[in-house]
Amino acid sequence: MEIRNICCIGAGYVGGPTMAVIALKCPEIKINIVDIDKSKIDLWNSNNLDDLPVFEPGLSDIISEVRDKNLFFRTDVNKCIDKADMVFMAVNTPTKTEGEGKGMAADLKYVESCARTIAKASRTDKIIVEKSTLPVRTAEKIIDILSENKKVKFQVLSNPEFLAEGTAIQDLFKSDRILIGGELSEEGKIAVNSLAKIYERWIHKDKILKLNIWSSELSKLVSNAMLAQRISSINSISSLCEKTGADIEEVALSVGMDSRIGPDFLKASIGFGGSCFKKDILNLVYMLNYYGLEKEAIYWKNVVDINSYQTTRFSDKILKALHPYENKTISVLGWAFKKDTNDSRESASIYLTKYLIENNVKVKVYDPMVSKQRVYNDLLEMGANINSKNLKFFNSPIEAIKSSSGIAICTEWDEFKNYDWKNIYNLMDDSPWVFDGRNILNIKKIKGFGFNVYSIGK
Ligand code: NAD
Ligand code: UGA
Image (cartoon, rainbow, N blue to C red; front, side):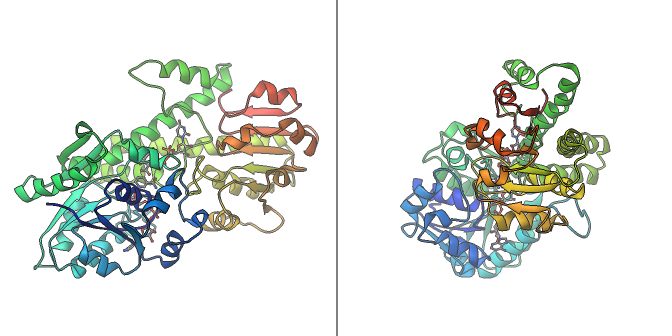
C-alpha cells in the first residue's frame, strides 16, 4: 500500500523531529502533525525558529526546509486523521499518578484517547503506528478500541523510537535499527511493508527488522532498561573508586575496551535523568510483578534505586564539604537532563536543588537552554518550598556564580569546560568548591586555581 498522507498525533520531542525527518526524506508524502496543546502547535508554526518548542541541533534547518511544503503543524485533529493513510501515535506515556499501578505502570490514557479519536474520525482504512513507548500487549487494547468503528479496517503496527535527545536528528538519519512489529496475516504483512518502504528511503534494509508485534513493543522497554542499567552499574562502582583511590574514568575506559562490553554508556554521573529511563524501567518492573516474576522485578527496580541514591550521594557530598552549610549559596550549572536539549524532565538538578533547599542552602541556577519558568515549574511540581530568598535564576553564568561558596555542575554543557575558571575563582567566596557531577573539568587545572574539587568516582 502506497502511503501518501500521514497524520502524527503528538507534536513533542518524538513527533516533531521524527516527522520532520520523514518529511525531508519523502517529499511526496504530506504529513500533518496534530496536538491537543494549541500553544505548542503555535510555537512549531512560529516565524522565529528560536521559538520552536523542541531544541535539537539541526532541527530548525529541517523545519525551515519542509514546513508548509509537505509538513504541517495543525490542531484540526479529526480532519487530519480522516485524510491519512497512516496515523502515528507519538503521545506521552508517563507513569501513572493514581489508580491501579500508581507510581509504576505507564499511564495509557493519552494513547487510549488517541485510539478513540481515530476510531471516531476515520472513514477510510488506515495503518495505525504505535510510536510511543508502550507496555507489551498494548496493541491488543488499541485494536479493541479501534474495533468500535465497524466500517473501517485498521492494521496496528509497533514502531518504537530510539532517538536520544540532543542527538535526535543524527540518530534519526542513522538509526542503528528500525523495529516494525505487525500481525502475521496477509494484511499485517502489507502494512509492515508499507512502513518499511518509508524508512528504506534512507535506512539500509538490513537494519529494518520485521518482528512479531509483542517482541517489538517489549524490545523498546528492554533497550532503555539495559542502557540505564549500564549507567547504574558504573555509578555503583564510582563510590568504590572514591574509597579506594581507583579512578572511575580509567576503570570505565579499561572495561569498555573489551569489545564484548563496549565503551558507550559507561560515563559515571550525578545520575541519569530524562523522561523515559525511570518511567520505562518502573513500567517493566510493574509488568514483571504483574506476571509474578518477583525476583526479576527486584533486579530491575535496583537500577532505578541506585540512580536516585547516586543523586542523593552527590547532594550529601556538597552538604558535608560546605559544613556548616546553612545559608551558604551553591550555584547549580545546568538544568537540562543532558547537553544539547532544552528538556529538563527528571533532571538530577531538580532533585539536587530541592534537597539543598530543604537543608537551608541557597541556590542560584544557570542553564544555557532551559527557561526560568521551566526551572520554577520543575521545582514546584516536585513540591519544593521555593521562595525569592532560597532560589534565584540567572541568564548569565557569571551572575549565577558570583559570591557563592560552591558550584555544582549538573549538565555536561560544552560551554562549562571553556569558562575562565581562574577568573571565576576570584568572583567566589573564600575556599570555593567545584562539585563536578559530570566529570567534565580537568581537576588538576581547577585545583591549581585554588578550588577544592569533588568529582564523581575520583
Ligand atoms: P511529549 O510530552 O514531548 O509529547 C507528547 C505530545 O502528545 C504532547 O505535546 C501532548 O500534548 C500530545 N498529546 C497527548 N495526548 C494527545 C491527544 N489525545 N491528541 C493529540 N495530542 C496529544 O512526549 P515525547 O517525549 O515526545 O514522548 C512521546 C512518547 O515517545 C513517549 O511514549 C516516550 O516514552 C517515547 N519516547 C520518547 C523519547 C524522547 O527522547 N523524548 C525517545 C523515544 C521514545
Ligand atoms: C534515551 C535512550 O538513549 C534512547 O535510545 C531512547 O530512545 C530514549 O531514552 C527514550 O526512550 O526516551 P535520552 O534519555 O534522550 O535517550 O538520552 P540518553 O543519552 O540516553 O541519556 C539519558 C540520561 O543518562 C542523561 O541524563 C545522561 O546524562 C545520562 N547518561 C548517559 C549518563 O549519566 N552516563 C552515560 O554514560 C550516558
